Length: 334
Image 1: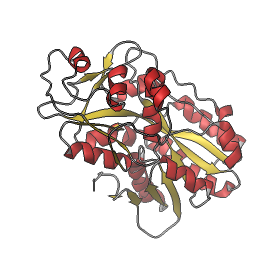
Image 2: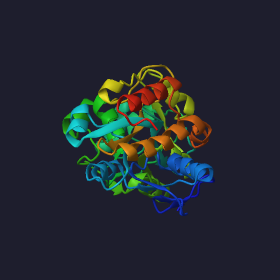
Image 3: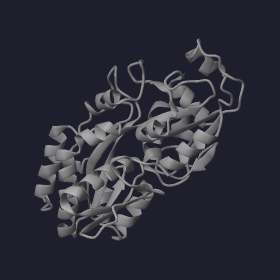
Image 4: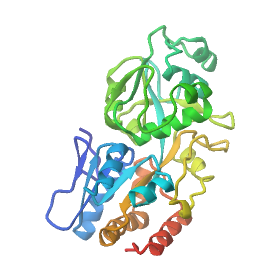
């Protein structure tokens, strides 16, 4: 169990448990800390509570398809044809970064350097030890141990996994050919943890492990993140600045229901595994959508400081305007 000063976190569920109107959502664990903080403050200001089940993007898509929640949340955007099939609307809510994290005794956060090829072949199981020549070449000043690399990945259907595997598929032909990309893949090696929380807990406990989590989970669990070589050839740390740099080149198109992947973005400062988290709504439930969108409009207008404090990137103002116009065009403007 983790605590966030502005919200209530209980075993992967957010509940602001008080009387009053309620919004029910489920899905991605990636944005859970910021949704928790937004919900807590929103209730204090409006008396409306948000129940959000942090069950993974796959679960969020499934629940909104089955119409068992007011909104679903997914870090893996659905293609326009899928949105037509499921009769859903889609828009982004927040931007963040997926970061490799390691547990190597004696190593500090930001000391280990990795590139796309090395990260790919660690997860393929081809690089088995921390003192592999490829890793040593990237880190000539580090004394790396001859210890087995314990690979940790997600066990559930996950948008964080979708972002991570889309990145690997773009930058590593071996990964694209042998594994591919998606919310769930057949992992060549490693052990699975449920949710960002599960992966963070495994990496925290297992010496000589590597995993991938949304940055807020890395920070809050004091995990040792790596530097990563980006498309411009620069080794960059995960940070608000490098996530912003990745988002600066993102062209979200309302006509495609904002479908977009942000991985491997150009730019000297861009973090290479960035992504947006998306909200999914049933098209026939206009009144419910207006209530949900009222919450997100409040978050867009009053929640940026909270998002930054929790290591997320708020949506650019121009993108927020696009979303408001999208709501208006579809009759779901709050």
